Length: 314
Image (tube, rainbow, N blue to C red; front, side):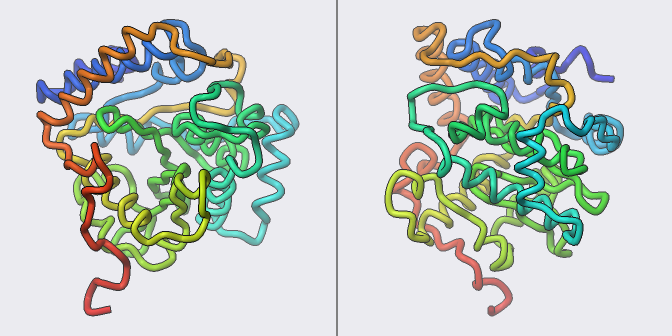
């Protein structure tokens, strides 16, 4: 179902012309950087489908199987990380959050540096400290699956960010493992991508525990002291950008047991710098036209108070 509008054909199921253009430009930029045969970070696109009113029922029913097909012993380093961070006494939600924190902090443990190199298998990402959102998201998905939790990737194509969904207690919940964000809905259950698409304001109604897990990427390149301004910006960006009404939201399957289906090259520089440059510029202009907030382009312009403890007189 929907096979003809998946992968590189995702734009075909998007109705709004500006959003459809954004999907095409996103793909141009990705291919300009990684190349047409760019390995896993291009190959993973084949498993993606736009999430909208036509596809939501399918994506939240049969699109991602609950069955975990991972065979113990096939990826021992990933198993070791799971074993170090989860235990039998944890609930599924606790396991998902523990692995999120491990992936969130992974760059502390390796040699990741902005603009140095990208790519590699999930084992290599662990060793060097994954930095890019697409890297940490596929790592998180793999660790969750080894822990027995169905998981998949979530992409906000126009904003240019990859995240995840993990299923705990029979319910899908959105996770931005790069920044440590795992919101809940008003009933205290994990908030799915679809719930956030339909009510981005959920980001304003998060309990203190969700805020406590946030760690700004800026912390990895300077003072690691908790900065409420950074946290507010992260939550507002999710609300206003990743779940913007004109965002091209996609869900994709990526399975830890399908390792042999993918290739894992290292990427040291853009495969086609001019193609990437043109697409990046066009993306910028398209976001402007679609109404992305000014602070998306210049974070210093953000001044809203979206801190916890402001709801219901708290």
